[in-house]
Amino acid sequence: GAVVSQHPSRVICKSGTSVKIECRSLDFQATTMFWYRQFPKQSLMLMATSNEGSKATYEQGVEKDKFLINHASLTLSTLTVTSAHPEDSSFYICSASEGQYGEKLFFGSGTQLSVL
Amino acid sequence: AQKITQTQPGMFVQEKEAVTLDCTYDTSDPSYGLFWYKQPSSGEMIFLIYQGSYDQQNATEGRYSLNFQKARKSANLVISASQLGDSAMYFCAMRGNGNNRLAFGKGNQVVVIP
Image (cartoon, rainbow over all chains, first blue to last red; front, side, top):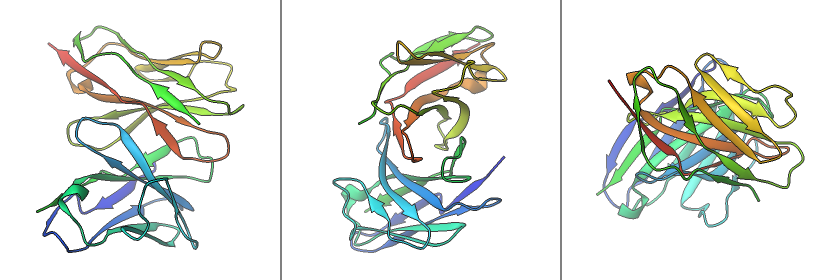
């Protein structure tokens, strides 16, 4: 089946630094990717929709200047957490589908971000 | 707006037994898709099964089957012959008409005991 690779799996950074997370579709082209955030023992909350070649669409309450999304190619989307603070510590996970209405949405393995 | 409800508390299941995880949903979209994902302690989201709102038959994927009752707006997951490796969080999710944005339920914790 389709595979989505997410890197890094875990990152620890100092407050005020920026962190980049990559999401790659390995064996299919993903015109759209999605970024989610998950706090411990809670559900996934959609942060933004990443569209190849255009600006990302952010969900209400998500700061676009804080969470920069770049979808430069059909197989790569990046999420950059800028000037990270401890409250940004969370599990971030991306997903991608084959085609706009693909039945199977595949997720990356997630990134655990800890901001000290 | 779409809403997914999973209200069951954590569940203990005997190995080799079947378990049903409840999921109800609410949407005004005429066409939608329903998903179930498994999230083990390692964190990755593993796709289990998909049901389209216009599918005539209930979806099945190996030991997983979806009991889709459209009129009641429910999409319960049935796991047959539970295995120890089935211990995980299980999330029900919905995709609305025209896009692949998923709305997730709060999840069900399942622990399979030998």
